Length: 396
Ligand code: ATP
Ligand code: MG
Image (cartoon, rainbow, N blue to C red; front, side, top):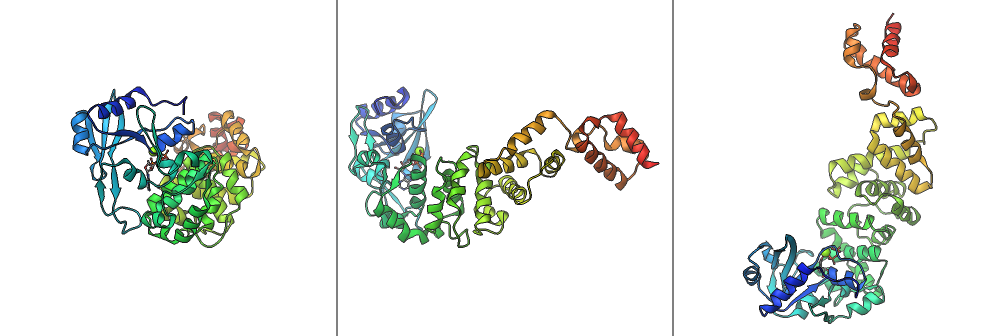
C-alpha cells in the first residue's frame, strides 16, 4: 500500500469531513486495490455525516443516490462519492434492500458489504478498520463473505456473480464455505434482472481468466439462460487471447456455447440477456462465419467481407485465431492493406454509369454484382474504362 496513495483531492474530502467532526474513511474497492498495490479506478468515502450534512460541508456537491445516502462531491473538478454509514433492511426480491438505515457506526456499515476484502476502511491518517479480517484474506488471496454466505446470497443473489468475477479478475480463490453457499443458493440467480446478469457476465468475460465462466455455468448461475451442458474450459481460457473488448468476447463466448449445445441460437441467448442489437448482430454473424469452412482464397475472404462487413469478419477471424492459434487475422489485414475492392462502394463504376450505358432496372444490379465479382478476382482490373468496356461487351 505504501506506493499507492490517494490523490490530494480525495485526502481533502476526508480531512474536511474530519475537521467538521464527522468520521470519514476510504472504503470498499479502493482500499482493497491499494492493499493489492493496484491503482484504484475510483475512490469511495463513507462517513458518519448524514447526506444533508455532507452537502452543507461541501456546497459544490449533488445528491446522486440520496435513497442510499450517496452524495457526489466535486473537488478541483474531480467527483468523489461520499456515502453515509448505513445498514440495510430485508431483501424481499433477493437483490434490493427494502429499506436502508443510516447509522453512526463504521462497523455496522462494513458488515453490510459483500466480501471481507471489500469491507475494509482506511482513515486519512493511515489507520485500517478491518473487523472481518479482509487484509489477511487479501494476503491469502481469498474471497470470503462477510458473515454467513447463504444468508448473504439470500439477501442479494448478485453477490454470487461478484464472487466469481472478483476471483477471475484478481486470480483469488473463492473460500470453500462461500463456494458452498453459492452452490446452495444458485437457483436464486433466476430472480435477478437480466441486465444485472449481463453486466456481471460481461465483466467476467473481460477479465484475464474468462475460464471462470465454466464454474459459473457449472454452478447453475446461468441456468435461466442456457440449456444443460458444459462449455469446453480450454476454449473458454482462449477467450483471453481476444482483444479486451466486449463484442469479440461475447462472439467467442457464443461460439463456445453453441459448440457445447448450451444454446441453439445466438440471437435468442443474447436478447434474453438484453444485449444491444449491434452486439447481437455482430456475434450472430461471427458465429455463422465460424461455422463455415475457412476460405482458402482471397476471393472467398473478400466474399465474406462483402457479405458481412469488415468489423464482423475481423471479429470472427480473431475468434478463429484465438481458438486455433491460426493467423487468419493476418490474411485479413493483408487484404485490407492492399486496398483491393470488395464492395460496390469501391467499384470503379457506379449504377449511374450503367444507366448511362442504357441498362435499366434489375439489369443494373446484376451487372454491378457481376463486375464486383470480377474485380474481387482480378483486383488490378478495377478501372473505370476497362469495366465500362467489359459492360458494353457483355451487353452486345
Ligand atoms: P470494482 O473495482 O469492480 O468497482 P468495487 O469493490 O469497487 O470493485 P463496486 O461495485 O464499485 O465494487 O462497489 C463498491 C463497494 O460497495 C464494494 O467494495 C462493496 O464494499 C460494496 N458493494 C457493492 N456491491 C455490493 C453488493 N451487491 N453487496 C454488498 N456490498 C456491495
Ligand atoms: Mg468500484
